[in-house]
Image 1 (cartoon, chains in turn cyan, yellow):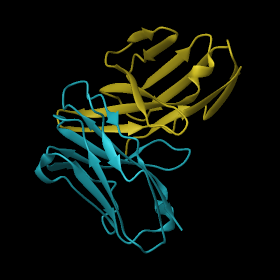
Image 2 (image 1 turned 120 degrees about the horizontal axis):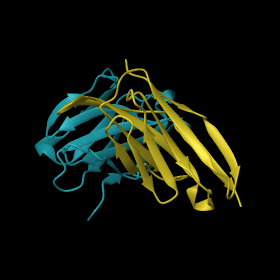
Image 3 (image 1 turned 60 degrees about the vertical axis):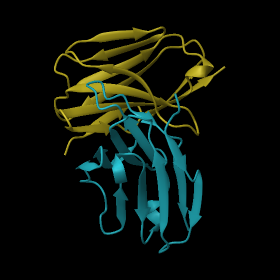
Image 4 (image 1 turned 45 degrees about the vertical axis):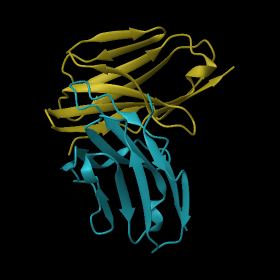
Length: 114
Length: 113
């Protein structure tokens, strides 16, 4: 089966610019997650969608980050304006929504803010 | 909020030696998952433990879930160079669609051939 698709793979921007990441989950997966992984740390959940509704966005810096999942399929994560500390890998993951909730991760977008 | 702590942060072993990483949660977990992330790669699911005291094996990997469902361990017997990577535990709290999955900071394993 096709995996979780993410683009772009890499992005370099200057601080105060805006950036957007795209994710297409595995077909049929109800739950979609955006994680931020800073070098040397574990993934930190930014936002979790169940179909097109938000389940958890408690750690999303809402003054600069936004995310949407229109039609309950693919999703975009936006940062505006970016700060130096936003440099990280942004991982999208999806799961079926069953009891096991095994997460399938995409390859991620490596963001560098200069 | 919930915290998941992992130790050690780094572990370097000679090929053939054993390796263990430990995971501790500040709260009781519904279940715990383990993931492996190769250098430059993304996390890949290894296993999920649900029951108190559960032990599961995958070839040379042994996973344990504590009796109180607040700690877990991953043990690798006779490490190989293919075991190199960062091992993360992820603790789940809550149930249904209203759950949280919190990742630890991971243990980076390097293996000297």
